[in-house]
Length: 112
Length: 115
Image (cartoon, rainbow over all chains, first blue to last red; front, side, top):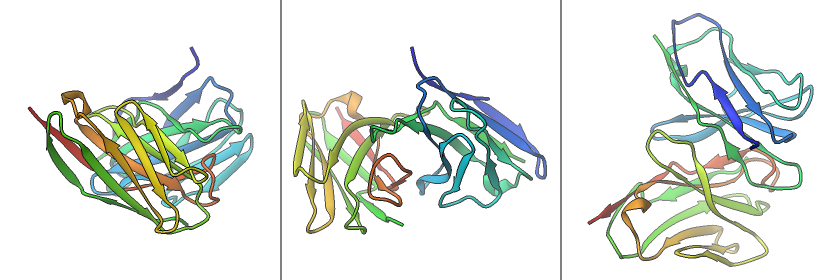
């Protein structure tokens, strides 16, 4: 079955380290998104992509970057992890003919 | 970009009663309004959505209403059951009005179903 998967599911890292979170979807969707979820804030958009080699900043993009070298993957990189980036990260995708966003299972990141 | 406000933050109802969660939005160009349910430790899952060309949509015990003039939309759950206990999020398109772009979410409503 087509799906969207995230890895790792849990990650502990230290302040200042570079971290990359993976997102892979098999629906052949063009639009992919990264959100972070924090208590009291709901989900907030970090970055998004409309297709290969396209990336755009969202609401809370500082300290994060993404790249899109193929349709299936949108990795999220924290260049120098900070404690404020401790959060749960969700990847999502949507087809160009629809509106519905489908979410991955999430990655819980702790920056110590 | 769009801004969404959601109320209440916590809602406790007796099993079998109805629950209503309300959201307001700021951008009159927004035309897609989904509702997501999130159980503890799980991913958000779409339960119902509505587009701006209709005022109400129903799916069994769940309904969503939209008032474009007042710029608010509401989730209605009837005959609540224990499995309805979760956090519910409303959302709207963050930038362009449509749902194929990024979403902005309300802060969530923790729905508690009392036995």
